[in-house]
Length: 323
Ligand SMILES: NC(=O)c1ccc[n+]([C@@H]2O[C@H](COP(=O)([O-])OP(=O)(O)OC[C@H]3O[C@@H](n4cnc5c(N)ncnc54)[C@H](OP(=O)(O)O)[C@@H]3O)[C@@H](O)[C@H]2O)c1
Image (tube, rainbow, N blue to C red; front, side, top):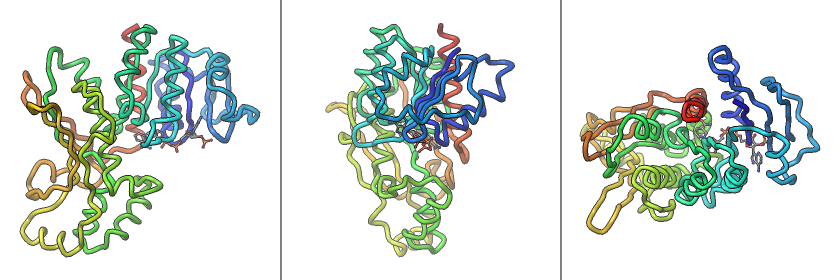
């Protein structure tokens, strides 16, 4: 399979390493890479992990020109997240579908903002669309539901999906201030450059909208999620909760009601033994509430960029099998 990567940062490079390590079993090759500031690279025989980029190919050259020169079968969209609009990933994905190309992305922006219309565009183009790494760093959710839970209706979900707030709350339980906790998360490389995106619950709201759009056909954006972050938590409040063997986690919930699907992100007080509190550090957890399978879930223990890359890889394999 010929792959074109748009975006070659942490995830793109980890994905290229993974492709290299599995080449004997999975004959995928990266035939083109486009970046914002480093230019682009092309080779139909397959690019090395550190290709020579042609810097004349800057981000002003239309994506259509890149795709036409690259001639891939699958476009892998791995550009920076814009939580407010889903761009530029949204336009990149639309340009790929307009050419009948299959798309894999780890960028949750397009799924949180425009999933239904992208799914329809893919259907009309006869193209496949996969996005496993958008919510839990590659741990199976979307492909698990698609491939292993036939006829199941997802009626709601509960998740602890944002690593930064978990690290910050853990740090506050150990006597640090919120600012020190944020600095720790930034040192670990897991916080967004603007950490308020995590602390104010926008990252969780985007993940909640993405899950609701795909699993519950909700047609929402992050703005439709009733959202409150952890910004008002104080060291004193956390210490008092710890005394009574309780803690706090930023919880995403979706629940079907007579009025429709209710979506919420809140800092919730939990018993230390609650399953939502039990996954520590950067680990995360999602429970799906279903009609036929009761509640089933996915846990990812300390996922990193290699797992995000694996989610992208699993999507490529899933598409290759479907063709
Ligand atoms: N890192 C993770 O663990 C993780 C986990 C789950 C999901 N994700 C998602 O995966 C995506 C990639 O993450 P990352 O950590 O690899 O990001 P990153 O290291 O910041 O890399 C982003 C890449 O996108 C390129 N880019 C930005 N705008 C572009 C444009 N208009 N056209 C072409 N290329 C463009 C950048 O080019 P330059 O190199 O020239 O700057 C860079 O190569 C993001 O959407 C992120 O939310 C990441």
